[in-house]
Image (cartoon, rainbow, N blue to C red; front, side):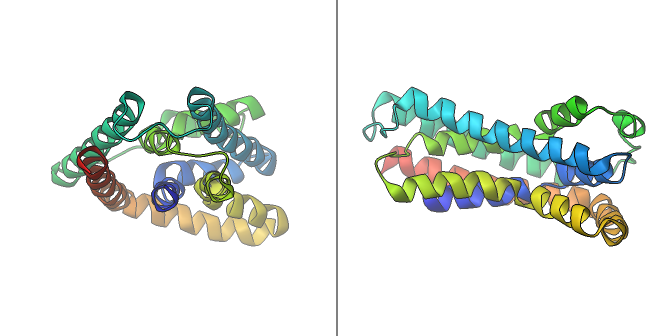
Length: 214
């Protein structure tokens, strides 16, 4: 479970879409406050999903090949296959010019609530769902599993937290460097999406198959 959560948490934190949106928020009026609202909402969403799963399992992993265990493994396999398919689709389709999202022009006037809602909207829910399927195996009587769950939530939020702290400590330098990072993310967005989808998808597919047949 520990390795699975590390892989999923890393894939989540490296996603280009939410990182680009977050940089845009930081560069807007009251950017640091909006960024903080985004980060807290993002982390709260992850924690809420983990807590819901633990409430359903009672903090005790189901027996191997029981119905709950099989459903979780099948869900992980389905998400993995879906990510692989999505990555292949994005890789094969013809390049398309993308204009800025409609919400970009409204970021300057966005409220803190809107920034928090944007975090919920941009969260990669397929990967979050895969994380939930893995959390089914968490045993709350194990300190290692507790640490794994905490590290997973923090790792999935790491890129946002680093940028928020940087913007708070060195606003001028952060504005220039994060603007450059956003430009780089925009230029490589398609490749990053394809790579993350394929890597995470292959891993989840392989793990799902192994869990179902082992």
